[in-house]
Length: 161
Image 1 (tube, rainbow, N blue to C red):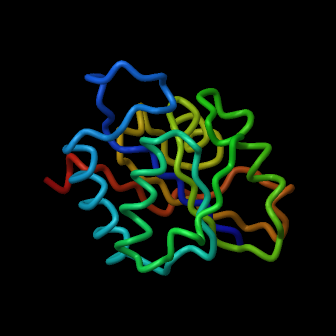
Image 2 (image 1 turned 90 degrees about the vertical axis):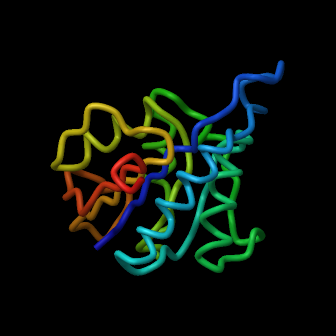
Image 3 (image 1 turned 120 degrees about the vertical axis):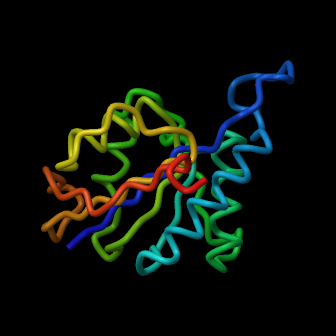
């Protein structure tokens, strides 16, 4: 069995004149990420590996998760293909993962993550909000065989406030 956890970056700030990939989190983005990671820890086992988009808002969200979980920052693998808004590059990335990894967590962006959750999960979601988390299970042995799986659960920060 393979498990994929998708985490959309927290709410980002538009108040700075920086390129899209340099936008930081707003304070609400940080607090929502903390709510979601604490709920995640209460729900299940931890991932074997963590990957993140190189965008600042995704990395900041990832850091909140890894610090809370107790993973070292050095254990996070930054992957350029995860800075993707359509989802094609994320899907290719997941399908290329080593089969020795059974449980991964990926930090990235919308519309890619909503799309992937709907393509591969069995619970339709209209929009994965910022700091939202979707956990998907697959009855496969190889990531390259990725196909429709089961949505184990979705964590929405608004529902935790």
